[in-house]
Length: 484
Length: 95
Image (cartoon, rainbow over all chains, first blue to last red; front, side, top):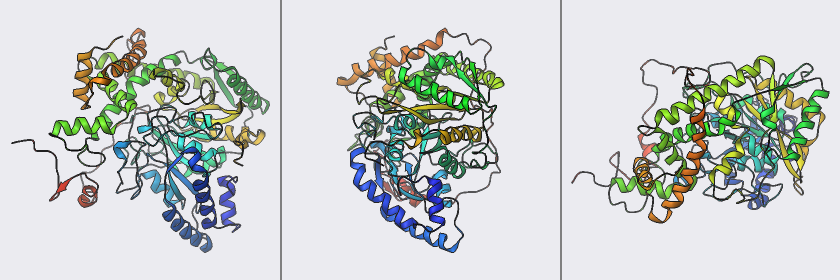
C-alpha cells in the first residue's frame, strides 16, 4: 500500500479496496519499523490517527467523504497542531503544546486527511541539511551518510522512505525544493500569499510559504487543492479563488515556452546534475515545448540579499521567545534580564543565534539603510529580472540545487558554504514566485531535481508541465534500495 | 570584514542572548563571514530603485473594530512556565 500514490489511495479508499484504518495502521507500522534509521518523524500521533481513520471510514461508508478522506499524511513540525507538541526543531519549543491548529492543519482536517505525526526539520527552518535540528539530523534514505536537505528534510525523507504518501512543508529560501530534490520526490512552493501562514511558526514573514511534498506532481496538485485558501487571519494572504489544480494536469504542453536561465548553468554546477537537467529539458522539448535561453542578470545577488532580509525578519519574529509565556525557561534566573538572556542562549541553537545576531546588526541604528534598505532594493531588481523573463516565456526551468546530497559535516564551519546550497532557489522567494522541484535523474545513485519556476499564481501550469514530464519518465518512481 | 568584540557585545545585549567568553571568537568568525557575503550588495547601483516590501504590492487589510475572538486565557496560560491569578510570573523587577 505504501507504494501507491495519493491519487491511487483516494481511489482505493473510495472503492473499498482497503479501509483507512488498515492504511493508517500500515503506515504507523512502517514508521515504527523504519523511522529509527532516518529520524524523519519526531512525534507519532498513533492514537489520534487511528481515531481519525475510524471516523474517515464511517464517512466513506456513508458516501459523503471529502477529497482526502482517510488519506494519511505528516505535518512538518512548524505547523501548530492543537494538543500535539509543535517544536519547530528547537529546544526552545520542546515543551510547546499549541492550544490551536494552523489554518493548513485545519484545512487538512476538513478534507478528512489522517495525521500520522510531525516531521523533523532544521531549527526554526534555518538550514539546508537538517543538521541544526535539536532532535538530531535526518538521514537521507538514498544514502544514510548524506543529508536529506533542509529545512523540510524530515518531510522529504519520510515521503522518500514511504513512511507517508505526502507531507506538508515550508519554504523560505528553498526549504521545500532543495530537500525534495535531494530525496528524489516532488515538492512545490506556492506563490507568496497563496497558502495561509496562520499557525505556521514564522521565520522570515515576507518570504515564508507553506506547500506540499509527495512523490508525484498529480499528488502535489491534490494536496495543494486542500492547502491553498484565503484566510482572514493571515493579513498577507491573497484573496483569490483557488483553482482545481488537478483539472489541467492532462493538458498538452505543445507550444509551452520554457526559459532556461544561463546563470543557472554556470561554474559550481555539478556536471552530473547538469546532464540530468539538460535531458529533462530535452524530454519536454520532445513533447512540443520550446526552449528559450534567458538571462536573470541579478541572480548572484539573491544569496547576499536574502542573508540580510531573512535574518532581519527572523530577529524580529524570534524576539517573542523570551521564556515568559510559553516554551523553554532557564533555571533560576537571577533577574528579568538574566531570564531573557539565558533562556535565549540555552533555548536557541548556534545557527539560530547567528541569524538573530546578523539580523539585529542589519537593523541596528546607522546600518538599516546600508543593509536592510539596500537588500529590499536589490530584491526589486531580482523581481524585475523575472518580470522581464516572463514577458517571453511561460515557465522557467533549471537545476534545483548545485549538486546531489552531500555528506554530514561536509560544509565545515563556514556558514556561507551552506548558504550557497540555495543559490538557485532563493531568488523565487525574494520575488514571491512559485517554484517546484521534480525528480529528473540519479547521480552516483543520488537524486537530482529539476526546478520549475512559474509566474504569480501559475501553479496549475507548473503542475501540468511536471505531470506531463512524469507521464513520460520514471524518475519519480525510483526508490531507495530496499524501500519499495 | 572583521566584527569587533565590543560590537558583538552590543549585539548580544540588543538580541538578549547571553554569549559566553569561550564562544565569542567563534561567534565573531561566523558573523564576519556572513557580513562579508552580504557586503557584496554595497557594490550594486540601486539609485532610483524602490525598496520592495510585498511581492504583490498588497496592502494591509482593515476590518471593522469588532470583537472576533473569545477569551482563552486559561488555555494560553496553561502552557506558560509560571503563572498566578491569571498573571505571567517573572523575577521581581522593582524592589
